[in-house]
Image 1: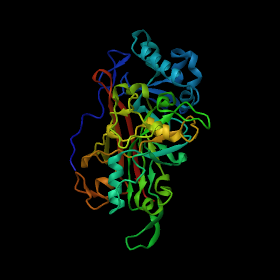
Image 2: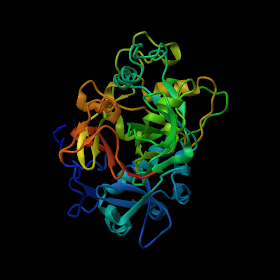
Image 3: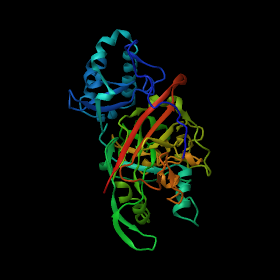
Length: 418
């Protein structure tokens, strides 16, 4: 498969001439300001930082001067306290950061608090409380139905009525760069014999994840209009999948061992405030959703985000998030409609993102059509599913204000033998 690169993966970084600014076209420019947790060789304790171009501003150190009233939010070594602080505080801190980073008077104070990204080791940014994964892309769900359930309707009868999902395993959510061991489990061979062993159909799924900040009480449902009050931001997700284990176990209760061995997330959480220019109308739904899911006439939470998937450095797919059938606001409304409570650090993922074109598919299962048409790479090798040593990288970008680009960062993972 041959795809044309959309542009450079890294552009101009910290601009020395301006001292307190970055190039306007940098994906981690002042219009993005994502939060993460890092360490470096000089200080091994985890610290909260915000990405500014190719540097990280150490907020654990800078907060006493920048936002002294909120200094306690940056002392815990993770984003948990910041996530719990709520929408008004998130916006106030982002406004203060923008003011400081655009005012030359603060350059001398900020300069020693900037750490080059290349000198930093990124950590899991927050404590994952619960993890839920949805299936919200009609193209992906249809492809899987055609592959795994031939001769039956591609979509289950409930799919266009509600965001289908499953409750995953929070303890196996890992930060980008963590090796992924090939899982073992039961699977059924084509002749019907059931065996145990390492998965031979290991796959990726290109997704976005939504990070909950403000919790809710047990028994409280979150309406569509409450999405931005509870969700802090967005990260990139790789929902690793062992397709042979998954296919044998998922009827009637859904995925378990085929999904629970690892879920990788990007180290940067991009605030919802950075995605205002990316908001679009989602596709028309038919049938019209029930009232608690009906966003007709409401503020739109479709997002014009493009993901890029690379296998061993080669671009193999560019899934478009803008066509997702169910939005994150609808997912959250459905997740809580029964009164299930939210906790700070809850993570819910979109499900695999796929487009209508063959080079927009968000998994190898689709790209190789379950290994019946293996993907040919530039070096001449082929892949139906992932081999040991393969590295998958997923990045995402969105339109920003005034023609800029908002970067959501990268999630990487390399497959280790079972």
